[in-house]
Amino acid sequence: MALEVLAPEFNCVAHPLADGGEGTLEAIANNLDGQWQTVRVQGPLPGQKVNACYLWLPQEETAVIEMARASGLPLVPIGERNPEITTSYGTGELIAHAVQQGAKQIQLAIGGSATNDAGLGLLMALGWQFLDSQGQSLGWGGQALGKVAEIIPPVLNTFPGVTVLCDVTNPFSGSNGAAQVYAPQKGADPATVQRLDQGLRHFAQIVREFDGFEINFPGAGAAGGMGGGVAWALGAKIESGFTAIAKLTQLEQAMAGCDLVITGEGCFDDQSLQGKVVGGVIELAQAMGKPVIVVAGQSQENQTRTPPNQRQVFTLVGGDISLATALNNPQWALQRRLVQVKQHLVNFTN
Image (cartoon, rainbow, N blue to C red):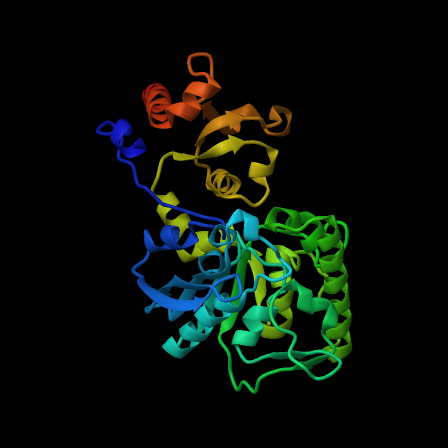
């Protein structure tokens, strides 16, 4: 819509972006020549099968995988959400398929997960075994974490480099860890949260005894401990989702040829500047000396933190558009506000 409203006076270039959550594959596919791969895999619930797709970039020999496609919360009906039983196994199956394709790099976006299994399911799909004190397989889900007594890794000569895309800095366990912060939205009641957190602590101790790896680091709690699990087992690097996707889609090169940058999101606030797309775009644009316009549904930013001359913020909700009107008629509200943005640009260029 922005391109239509601002044309023909302005030549606009669209550059879709994401930060590692849902929409990551579409953002990359809109910028790069990729091939969609669809695989029938295990869903987050036991007995559930889903058709999950990932993006194969043949020129880069890279697979971009969204965990949410195979192990995402939207795949689980609200009444069946239970992170003690949901598994990341299907995400591991997507990785295994990409490895068979010849991938040399895996970009794993882990936003929107339904799981709290620290990536055990994913690793099981890649040949790892996690056994209890009786030498029996533990099965899937977060319930397994507190029972792990033995770890048997697969025999792998080589494995692609894995980069985890996320903007979460939570540790593996504890008051700000995976279970305490995120498990409730995945269906866990207070008692379940405590069991999951204890399981994460236990698993961290088992890993420490296994090879000395300290799994409780910032970012390890992403996606129910997935960040820590794949960092330990696969040597994955955890990167800002926005930074990695901006690099992959060559955002800086695209921005270099522009006179002004327009970005936005639903609610623009102080958290927007902490690893999210809009904050990353603003930071890069300002580093390159490009003026920025932010178009948002609402703005709750602390204006004292940033000099106002560094960017201009337009909100859909304002004196002429109520919140109810914007929610009921978002397309109309956006178009109306973009007309105002266009007038601002006309004044800016004159």
